[in-house]
Image (cartoon, rainbow, N blue to C red; front, side, top):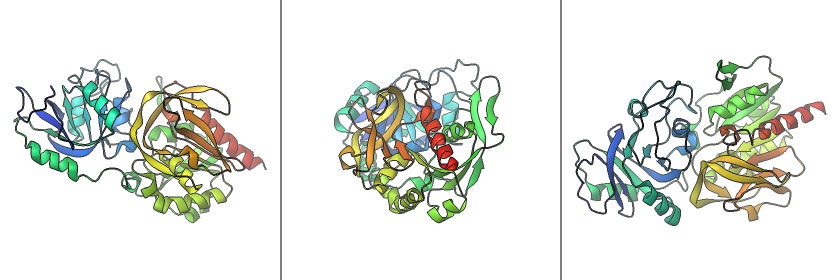
Length: 389
């Protein structure tokens, strides 16, 4: 149900309008109203609830290329944050009826409950090709069951939205106060576990952290103290951590880096092991003197091959980023360790003479399913080495 005209076709109760004037008609799902942001696409065939609650999607509306969204329903466990962060979703088919023993709620009801707007019936292949060829556009989803839409006003709204470049979204998606995390990984028999006697203490700087990252750390016997994005290096080091983790998060790393980079530099100078993921990877690179840039088409999906140049092993990874570290800007004392086999972009780095490393992708998301879990073990190994000296 996509059309270049401004006249709604029969049955249209929602519309997606892009800043260039493109109009995609469809059927509204979730909450009513309108929302503006960046339109991106994700190629994953499952995990839509985790994706919608991933803080890295702040400011974005997700086009799901897989048509059967809703097939496992929703539940209270498969979340990365208590409430959805992605602004809305764009679907090819109507939301699929749930068919899973863990399902507690229909995906449409879940969207409505959390005030998230969506549109179904869109030619997502056409939209994905447009994003792939021309870059991620600003857009507006409007859901109005009465079927009346002011298209020129929606186009103007899309054009007026400033875009993600230059936006610091980490503070809005970080915790307001520090807290302790002790939940470990999920099992079918027992659900989420609980940390027993911790062997190590990790401070996680929350730029929009995913819960499953914290679970992976706790599962390796780490007591995890989560602190807000703007916590000073002095306050972090006063907690006497064995290691520091720099989390994923949304927005432009250069914008967040205005306050985060000086802190990260002090943390790296302390000699403590430091591990970064996604936005944490990008801001670590900035703190080391490298540069970041906006990608025309970001990496978002669960089937991205990455090669670890230190081992020669290829991992199937989950990725979600619209910014990337310029691999040619790395200083001499920093080694590139991982590269995307899709486009050759930098996917990992390490400091040659310090226990400091980072990756662009998400090892906790388990698309491999366990291809990248070694990174958490590597971090803990660096902690153990540091403590044994």
